[in-house]
Image 1 (tube, rainbow, N blue to C red):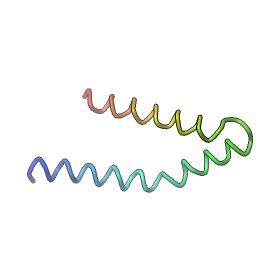
Image 2: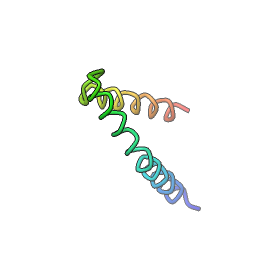
Image 3: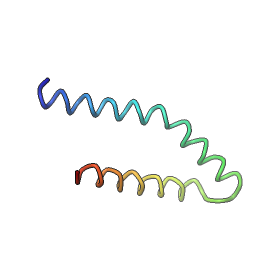
Length: 61
């Protein structure tokens, strides 16, 4: 497979993985908001920070 196809395949796999965990992330966000543990904004801010850190870790390998 060409390098471009391999890259696209990885990208598609990442999208599929995100699609499968997205409902769980939303459920956790709603639960935390309902229990007044954290606001939805704060939760997603932390999720974005976590994803950014993971991307940087993977990129540095």
